[in-house]
Amino acid sequence: MWSGWPTGLVPVLRGGPCPTRQAHLGPVADRFDLRVRVDRPDIADLLDERAPGEATAVVADRVAGARARAAARGVIGNAQTEEVGVERAVSLSSEASEVLEAALRSGRLSARGLARTRRVAQTVADLTGGEDVTAESVALALSLRADPVALSSVG
Image (cartoon, rainbow, N blue to C red):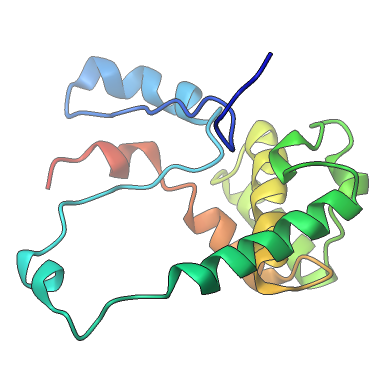
């Protein structure tokens, strides 16, 4: 089957202040690799021509490098790494393992979330050109898995 899109299906989950929704949001949200809150940008920031951001070509080169590193591991993207084999596919530094262990022990991370976080941390390492997943890569991956309750608060 042909797919003209560079990624698979990207479901979007929106939380809200409803208490009934809150009770079910956690287990459902745990199945998402990335959980981020997206706020409306400030108008002044949109109109500020002095801060254009990174050039598209620079980002494209970084993504191409990350995809090449994933391909060297035998996958098109890290999301394709099987949950069962993620321990073998993702090489963690000892400090990165400690960060994951602390997140698991504190209850911030579930067993399902562990595999997802490892894959995202590998993507972060690939995008930064690293060979192994560092504690910084894991910390960033964890920050991209925001608490579902925090995501649902209306600001």
